[in-house]
Amino acid sequence: MNGGAFQRVMFAVYIAIFFLYLLGPLAVMAISAFNTPQYPQVWPIEGLTLDWFGLLLADADMMYGLQTSVWIGLLVVCISVPTGLAGAIVMTQIQSRLRSTYYLIVVSPVLTPGIIIGISTVVFWRQFTTDTGTRFLYDGIALTVLGQSSFISAYCMLIILARLQRFDRVQEEAALDLGASYPQVFRHILLPFLKPALASAAVLAFLSSFENYNTTTFSILSDKTLTTVLAGRVRQGTTPSISALAVLIVGVTILAAIAYEIWKRRADAAAARRQRAALAAEEAELAGEPVPA
Image (cartoon, rainbow, N blue to C red; front, side, top):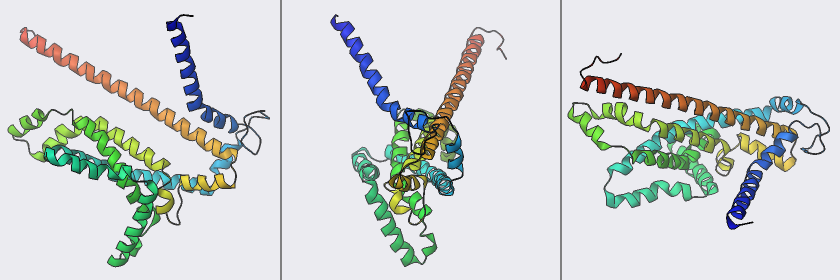
C-alpha cells in the first residue's frame, strides 16, 4: 500500500470514528426510546413501543419545564439580539484606539463562568429590588432572562459584527446625500443587509438559552426549566421517557434545519432571478431595445 492509499484509509477511519463519537449517543437514545424495558436499553430489543412518548407528554414537571425554557428562550432572543446589534454598531463607530478596551468589556461575560454569572445575578437583583421597593421583580424567570442575556448578547454581537465588517459604508453616505434620515438608513439599508446575521444570532440565542444549565440553576430560584428538571431526574435514575424527549428535540431540530435550508435556497434563487432580470434590462437599455417586463 502506497502513501496516498494509506492516507485515504486513515482519513476514512478518522471520519468513521468522528461520526461514531458524534452520533453514537444519539443513536443509543433513539433506540432506547422505542425499547420496552423500564431502564434505557439498546440491546437486546425486547419489543417496540411508543409508550415512553405518551409518558413524556403526561409528565407535568417535564412539560412545565419545557414550556418555561421556551418562554425564557424567546425573551432572551428579544433582549440579546437588539443588545448585540447595538454593541456591534458601537464597535464600528468608536475610535480605533478604544476598540480593544471596548471589545474586552463587552466580551468579558463570555469568559466568565456561568456559575459566577448566576450567583452575581441573584445577589445584585435581590439587593436592587429590595432597595428600590420593587421586590415583585425578584422572579426566577426574570432573573434567568437577565442572567442569560448578559453573556448570550455577546455571542449575538460577534455574529452581527462579522457581517457588519463586510458592509459598504458608501451605501449609507449615498442615502444620506439623497436626503434620507439616519433612522431611514438604518431601517432600509443596514437592517436588510444584516438580516442573515440577525436570524443566525436569534437562533443561537434561543438554543444557548434552551440548553443552559450553569447560570439557570442559580438564577431560576424556586422555578424550574427543562434542564433543571432533567438534572434532577438523572440524579434519581433515568427512564426511556428522557430518551423520547431527546428524539423529539433532535427531530424538531432536523426539521427546522431542513425548512431553513429550503427557504434559503428559494431566497437565493429568487435573488439570482432578480439579478439576471436587472442585468437583462440593463443590457437591453444599452442596446436600445425594449426593456423586458
